[in-house]
Image 1 (cartoon, rainbow, N blue to C red):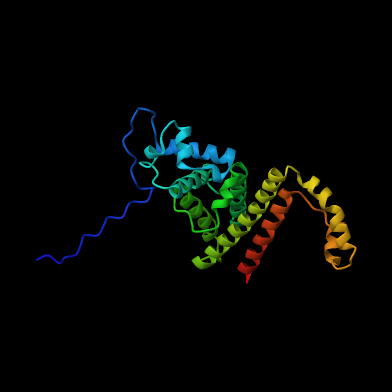
Image 2 (tube, one colour):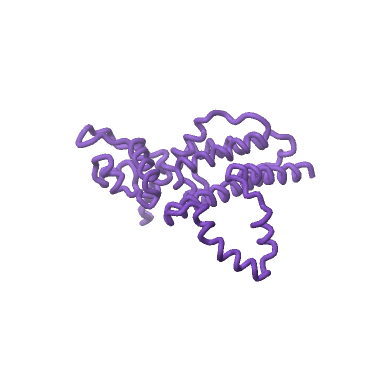
Length: 245
C-alpha cells in the first residue's frame, strides 16, 4: 500500500566530494584545477569583483555552461579559490615549536598569503571554510595549542586560536585597505598625509584633541611589519597570562 509520500531528493554532494565530468579534448580541455587557477589569476590581477564564470570561461576558451559541470555556482568557485590559497600555506610544511612559535608562524603564513592574493582577506571572517586545505590549516592551528600543558580544555584551545585569527584578519584587512586606498586615490600614504596635514593641525590647534596631538608629535609610527609583530605578541602575551591563571 502506497503512503503517498514522494521520495526525498538526494542532496547534491559538496564540491569537494563531487566528481568531475569526463575529460573532453575539444574545444578545450577543462578540469576543476584549471578553472580555479584561471580564477586565481583573474582575481590577483583585477580583484575579486572581476571573477565570474563567464570571464573564467573566456580565459579558458570555454563557454560558462561547460564550467557548470565542474563548478555549479560562483560561491563554489570562491570556496575552491580560498582552499587553493590555504593549500599554499600548508605546503610550507609542518608547524614546529611551542604554541607561541607555532601560532606566530601560522599568522605570518596567512599574512604572506594575503599579500600575494589581496582578495583573500575579503573571504575570511565569516563561516569556517570546509575545503581539505582549510581543514588542514585549522587542524594544524588547533594541534599546535592542544599539545601544550594547560590547554587540556578544547574550549580554551578554540578561544586561543580564534583570538589570534581575529587579530590577524583585522590587521591584514587594515593593511589591504590602505593599499586599496592608495590605488584608488593615486596617492601613497606620505602624499595623503601631506594633503591632510594642514587640516589636522587646525583641528589640534583648537585644544580639543590633546591625546591625538601627542600621537602626532611623539609616536614613532613604525613600519607595518613591526606593528603587526608587536600586536601579535600582545595577543600571545594575553593568552599566556590567561594560561598561567
